[in-house]
Amino acid sequence: MTSTLTPSLIAIQKAIKGAGGPAKVARECGVSVQAACFWRDGDRTLPAEHAITLEKLNNGRVRCEQMFPGVDWEYLRESSKAQATSPVTEVSHA
Image 1 (cartoon, rainbow, N blue to C red):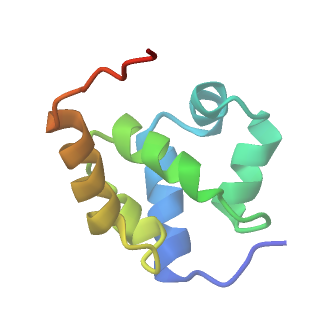
Image 2: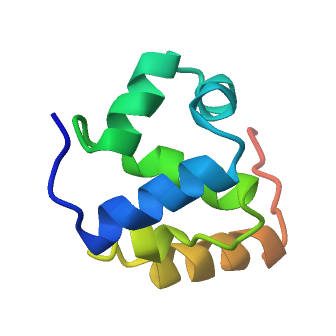
């Protein structure tokens, strides 16, 4: 069963193809090839945390925002940058 081609599903299909196909995506995401094929075909929902892996595998050509437009990825990206640049303070256990 193939789902209706939505812009999100088209982006997921493009991301999986651009990443090297379902077998490579499965290896990188730690799932079965069947799961990656289900995501590609729209038979199962791609978990949002794997969108990040797909974006990385595509060197940013397919963005998380395209696969999951309802998620505020910009907020998450900015929060991540802020955490990476903030100094680490040691906690005293006196």
